[in-house]
Length: 290
Image (cartoon, rainbow, N blue to C red; front, side, top):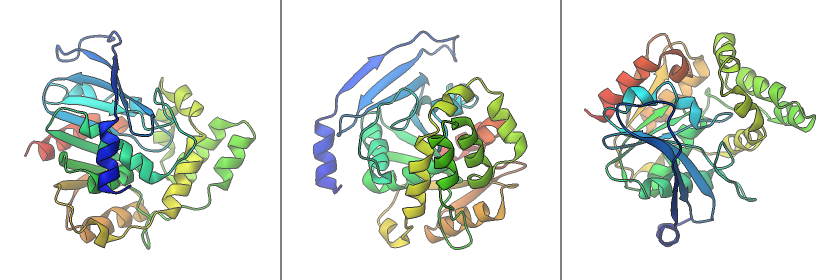
């Protein structure tokens, strides 16, 4: 999609809000579910709350907006947070056609409908989507990309999704998701156990079929530094100090190619939003509001 098509798409966007009662007060700010339409008619759901500049959260594969549930309350005294469900996840709808480019368009078009200034935090596959969205929009004031698994030499080169897809075809979504987290995302057993004990786990299992297409999208993705030559948005890469070497290589290679800095999260791996939400919130705030 070129810039002219993107702007034309924005003109057709419709916005509806469905406000849900919050489980409790969050920094004396209301929370609710916001639904934004993107240009192909897909409805993107965002859970919002807090006061301050807009901060958009873009989750990774095998996840949905509740991935940020431990972090957003810690940030809502300084930001109005918007945790989105990417297309096909959570309360967002889907479309027959799928591509990473459509996902990037979604993030850019959602940001265009949020009050400025807009900050963004993309995690894992959502980090790749966010990076591509930055090329499509100058709406973002700053961005944090937390361990995007870029397929670079020596990095997180994804294997075939066949094992995950076979488990889904056999009706075993849970096995598919555990296989993805173990063999593809390379998460530790401790982190996976936290996921399985979390109230959001049944929803994660339900959306497991989306993982196949996202693994395929990463395998087909080609990182071309030249395509980001005009990118002016300040951004910072986040990396867990204990993440596996391929992830370290992926993050540092891309950060160096784009002349951006890396913040290392001590004692963390791929999911500090679960294992160290206070640390993640502090580092996000320190960079975005610097």
